[in-house]
Image (tube, rainbow, N blue to C red; front, side, top):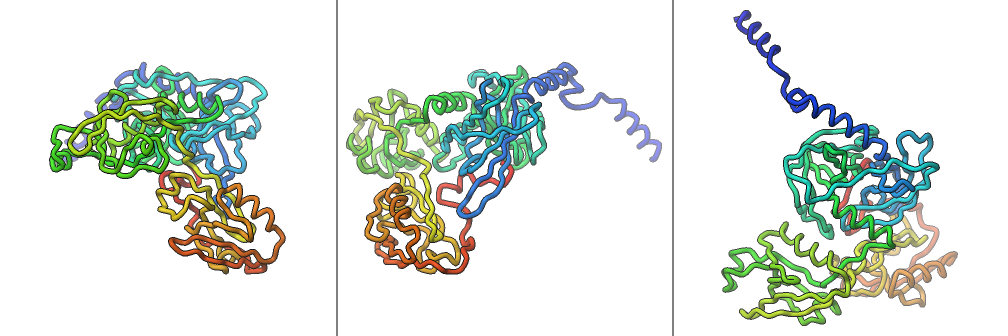
Length: 454
C-alpha cells in the first residue's frame, strides 16, 4: 500500500502544474507587464472623516486620471472627509487633496492634488469591449498593503445591487476586492481600465463601477458638477402575475407608486397606479426589483430640460404623455452642527420621502449626543427643528444663521416637529459632557456603510 501511494505521488509530481500561468507562460508575462504598467497610477488614499461627533481615519485606493493631479476614488472613501491625503508611488511625501466632487449615486469621487511633476496616467477601455469571462486584474491597497494585484475574470455585467439611491450596473468579478481596495482600478490584460472597484461581497464576488459611468462622472465633476434628469415618481416592477391579474398579460412596464408634488410627472398628469410602458421610444421592462435600475438610469441619463414621450397605460387604455424632465433634486443632504450637542441635515426630497416627514420646512435632527443640553431637553433623532428662539427655520441656511445668533446664550427655546406634535424644548448650557449615544449613522448611510479600510 505504501509503495502504491509513493508511485501515485511521483505521478502527480510529474503532471504539469494546473492554472493559467502554467498553461500559458505568455499570460504570466502579460500579467507582470500590466501590473508594472498600472502600479504607478494606483494611489493610496487616507481620509480623516467625521461621523456625528466622532473622527476616524479611513483608507482606500485611487486612480490617477490626469497628469496634473485628478484622482478617482470612491465616494464612500472620502464621504464627510475633513482632511484627505494621497500617496503616489515613487513620491516621498503624500499630497494634500481637495475633494473636487462627490457622486453618491455612482459611489464615485474626484480628488485634486497638486503634484510637483506630471503623474503617470491610466488609460481607459470601452465598456462595449468588456466581455464576460475575460481575464482582469484588480489593483489596490487591501488592508493597507500597497500595490496589491489579484487576478480573476469578469463574472458578469449589468449587476444591479438594489441599493437605495444608487444608479449603477456593476461589473461583477472574482478578482479579489477586499477592504482598502475600494477606489482602485479593474484592468484588462491590455492594461486598460475597465472600471473602478467599489465593494466586495464575500470571497470571489466583487463589484466594479463600469468605465462608461466613471468617465461620464469624471467629465461632469471636472466641468462643475453632476446633473441628472428627474421624473419624480416612485415605482415597482410589473411582474407577469400582476399584469395578468390587472387584465394586461402581454404588457411590460413599471407601476407608479407615488408622484412627487410639483415634479415633472405631476405636471404631466401622472398618478399612482399608472403603468409606464415606454420611455423615449423604448419599451420599459421590469419583472423584479433588480430590473428597476434600467429605467432609473435611463431617466437619470436624460438631460434636464429634455422633453420625452412616455407610454402610459391607465384604465385599460394606452396613451402617450409628453413630459419635460427637470434636474434631479439633491440626493445627499448638507449637514450642520449646534453647540448644544446635536446635528441636523438639510431636508432633501429623498429625505422627506424616505423618512415620511411631516414637513419639508426645517432641519432634520440626525444625531443627539448623550448628556448634551439637547439630549437633556428631550430632543430626539428624527425631530424636525422648525424654530430657534424667535427665528423660523425653513432651510439649513436658516438653521445656521439662527444657531450662530444663539452662540453664547445660556438658554435657547427651540420648536421641533415630532410626527403630528409640536414640541417646545428649552436647551440649557452647563449639562454633563456630551458623549455619543446613538449609532454613527444617518438615514442614507445604510447603502454605503464601510469599515475603516474601504
